[in-house]
Amino acid sequence: MTTSTAHEARTARLRAARTKDSAEKRQRVLTTIEAMESTGSPITFTAVAAAADVSRWLVYSEGVREQVEAARRRQDDQATPRPSSLHPDKQRRTPASLRTDLAVAREEIRRLRAEVDRLTQRLRLQLGAEIEGPDRAQLIERVA
Figure 1 (cartoon, rainbow, N blue to C red):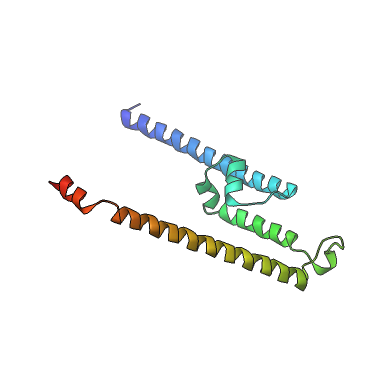
Figure 2 (cartoon, rainbow, N blue to C red; figure 1 turned 45 degrees about the vertical axis):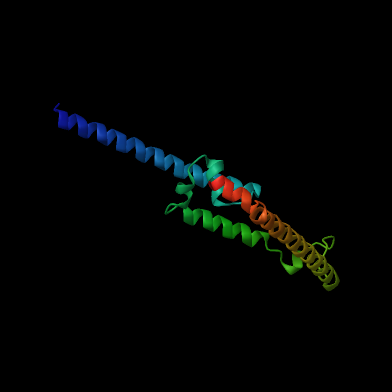
């Protein structure tokens, strides 16, 4: 066996091992997607990659990405409540509760804006004190 032939044989074995490893990882991703769907776990690219113990790059690769997106669509379709399937014990959003939420949010915005104004004023005062702080005579003495 010549050196060239040995090198080609080694390359072929490495390529075959890599192809086999890739196929196993892709199958592991598909199995993970099925398991996540059956348990109702939220399906995201990151979650699938972590659960299958593969890189995120793999779950975004062609052929796998489509499977993840399809599973996400199926999960979204199942999670969307139909009017006939609403449970009577679930609290519904009423106009009054929405108005209350809006009023609370507006009050929080007012409070946060006041805090930002207060902090901005403190920063202005601090920066002014730093600029005006050194005495002119001290500066001339330091420069000399």
